[in-house]
Image (cartoon, rainbow, N blue to C red; front, side, top):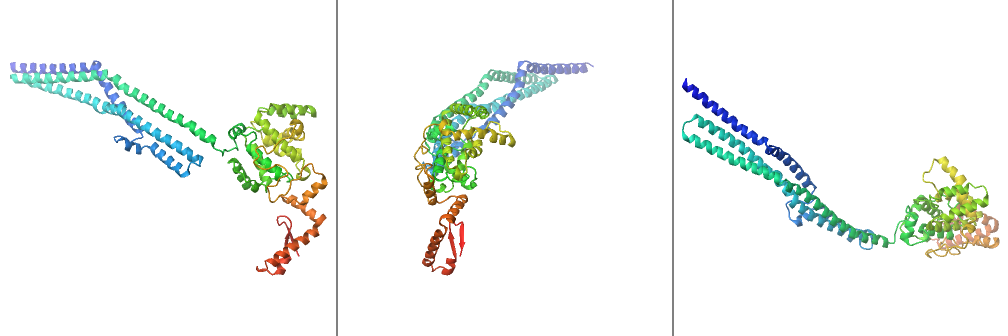
Length: 542
């Protein structure tokens, strides 16, 4: 009975001691250190994910020297490609010059990027790795070790109460001592973690500072090269003009009259003033596209395009229509329309003059230039069939339109009732709106605008000051440029000299036959088929 009582007392003491030790451990964890322990796991997760994502943002390969990192960098590859491309194109090409400047800039940006990434790796990535994979795991291992020591002490205490020898007491005290040391070490590590949190936070401050420094130096590199790029572009002669604002084109080219307007007008003055349906007849789409492209790059072969005045007129219309703002401006649209609605002719002309005077200087100069040309074109209206009204119909929509164009019906109404009422009187009274003579060949690059022939298929342009007899004589020695004018020449042959012309061409054909009799056909067959007339359009069969 007494032995059983002693046994129960030992078990009770053992149970109480174990519960006491557990309570102490739990109490330790329930103190502020318990909150620190919870934060440890969260900090570890955040640091690990941030390290992973930040490493993915780095373009260079980690753990290699600077030379290898530079070669693998995409910016370095891009810079090398640009420099090689500039060498292929040469300095004669604007694109080659741009590639050289941009390639050097990309190489400098690559060097800045390498310096930035090395700083990030040293001051941010590696410390974050140490925090997530070394420091916090060491504290967590210490916590697990403490739990193990608590169990060891519990077992030693149990053995002590079950044994009456002094060795059990020493074992228990030794286990308690180890547990105490481990617990103190754990507490110190946790307190140290809390104290160093400001250092951990500084990693991200370093990241932002490094990024700011990298972007600042990169911006300096870009800002230093931009003036050079702009200077190269401004110094380049070949500047596109179609679809560009008028003032921008004039400023870049240093001109007063837009290049397409002057070039087309000057060529038309030489070869298109008597072309029937000028600005009305549609040109060849391929020829028009080629001419627009040549005007856009500033390369123009006058000889080639002088034979096709409709393409020249189409290129001029396209330039006017493709302006971002009409030549007569959006701001003055209502002024023009209101002026066209005035019934009294004198008041309408005064209102139109007032609108002209409101035009910006660049628009006013080009509008005056164009109107003077169109006025000269109407001097040949008996031949080209282009009266001021017809010109206003075909060119008006290319000179003035509103921001928000309506449907087709509204546009047709505007063209027929308002635009014609604006352009037609301006052309009719061009000398009143714009008094004085005008030099069409402003730059002197296209020859004389009148009385000069640069076209093998077109002889002399008659002056509007010629009388009818001189004009008729001039027409006889002029080779027409279209089917319509071919028909006019055919009538001339019929009325005034058809037989004389026929005999002349037959003589030429016979001379050709006898001089080339070694060819396959017989002389009689060659004499029976004689081509006479303009552009081979007349075939006379014997």
